[in-house]
Image (cartoon, rainbow, N blue to C red; front, side):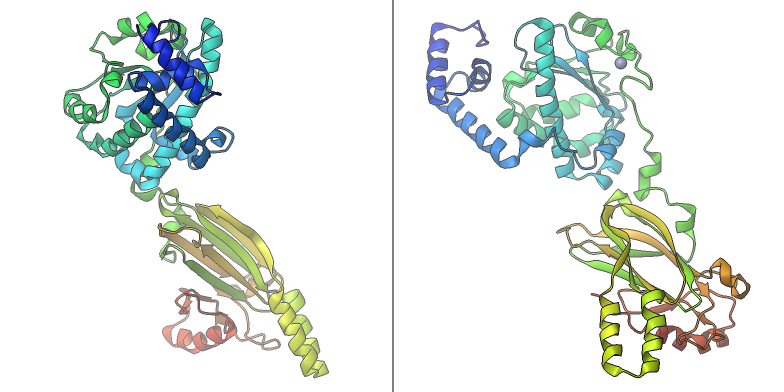
Length: 461
Ligand SMILES: [Zn+2]
């Protein structure tokens, strides 16, 4: 007797009854999966089921299909896969081109937890697809079919062994008897080496369901999979647009990802924001106004909480303070100053992104704060490349000077002719002046003015 529904020996029937007495709500098919996984040993099957119920409750796994899995786009790029059709027994089929995965690059973007989260999503989706499979064949289908294409498998794929081990342990505990059939196709010469290692982590019952097919796999697959569910490249008739199992080009993600040309500029700088840390850059322009530009990219498409806010704007700060100064009302002046300090206006609201590009045109003296907040990350530091610039706006074009980060401005209202460098103060509290057409002597003369113009900048640690 197989231990499947409708094919039970009297003693298996008796164990099933006992199992259901203990866990009232459980259906026959689920109960039998847990019982088969423990050879109808009631005590062990019950322990496995209890562990499973607790796990589902604690991990919030019931919600995984309703929420977006983080880094889903990246996962799709690195792991060519498809949920594609049903086999002749109604099992939902999952295809994966495992041999085409560049694990070396993938692990720069996705960690073990990311992979596990996607694996959970895949398992839950397949459980869900079983419902459609059941309808197709008119009886309950509760296990899946996988087709794993190993074309391209090399010793480099040994990086994936830790994942296979984690998946195997996890699935045997929490998805017992969910694997119906697994076909391995296009296994190259290195495969036996891998298979020897993987076998250690799989129970005998699981190994029985894995079929390593030789070169004639097409004919063999067609015995179990209807032609319309099988991609043409594997011997079927399906020709999904873009390929049934699409392989994305990940070459531009190698070495941390391609940089936009602007970020290759010598003025751009590298900055690593440690876990739980923040990086800030303040940019200022004088009463003539100016244009602020920023562009950045975090390596490996990791995200960071980025925002741009106006710390002091010309309209409600410089102009009104000068009129208040005229009144010589010290108390009112201070009150206004405090108010202006508190006045925050986001140009870009805080948002978790892995790159950003923007600009802001200010009509008068303005200071903006660019903030990269990695405070939510407990372990991962984020390496970025950043380029910021302050330049003259069209209205004062005649005063515009060549080069980056140049602006005609003054550190004090009324001192219109004092040209200076726009200064950048970053979290090391170091003022840096950008490259300009000034002679070194001129630059030296202007630098102190630039620093005083942004003297409100606070060091950040
Ligand atoms: Zn297709």
